Length: 148
Image 1 (cartoon, rainbow, N blue to C red):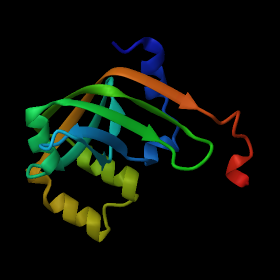
Image 2 (cartoon, rainbow, N blue to C red):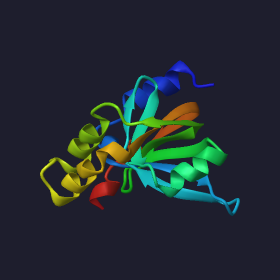
Image 3 (cartoon, rainbow, N blue to C red):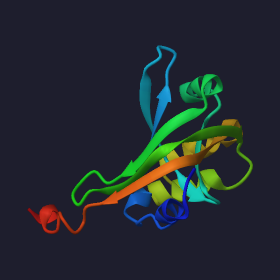
């Protein structure tokens, strides 16, 4: 079960980490974990992503709704959160897609944004409810590493 310290560490995700996708480990039909990256938003104790109704990941989640996840920086100083949780899927009914586009692309006027919005009626929401979370921040021990 997620404790209050873990919940606080997720809720206070550094603004730098909010620009990274959430990486999900999803069990594939071959029995092996597959890593997929999705844009996300954190609210109400869960991570929310959007994907098309025909996406491979949705078929896999129908079989096994357990996932591992990570949101982490790719350059020093390394920091992030990771954990495990359960997925639920529902039709897109709010402005989540627009919010994700604004966060990750910065505009809804790009070709990619317009294409994503043109498919909005066929998009599904993936809700990741964390069961267990850990976090790390090596900023102090890696001070100066980003400039090296």
